[in-house]
Image 1 (spheres, rainbow, N blue to C red):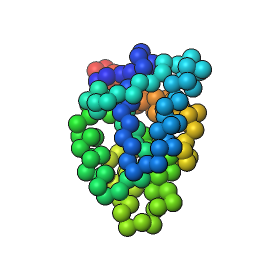
Image 2 (cartoon, helix red, strand yellow):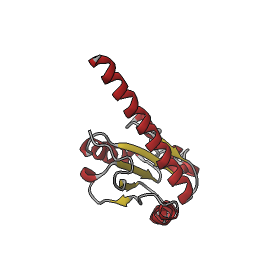
Image 3 (cartoon, rainbow, N blue to C red):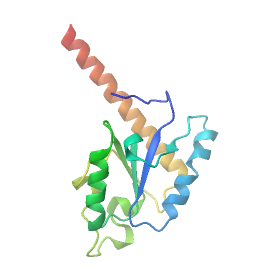
Length: 151
């Protein structure tokens, strides 16, 4: 099981569903925010098989659901999922459209939701740090459970 809690930079695969490009511009600036906070800057990877995190932005319509499920199935385990932007959360202003799929968590497990239109780089950084805290806590619980079994 891989653990990347600041032992190296976080590797992110960004999947832009039907997005306007606003989220992508904000995601491209997160390296500067991480650098200012003196944390290892995340790296955007082009292959899901190298990713630690699947970052989904934009409106998820029915044609994207099968692609997202395929990406999720191809990703190494454990893979974490962040839905960023109001469109990824619930379809945004298009939520009443006939082509918007049900919420993302009905199709794949989502670990963190980051609201905003588009989400600010600081909000993305906060979401990633919350995810890392969540992972750290779950790893401690697994170690504690393993130690009680061995005792």
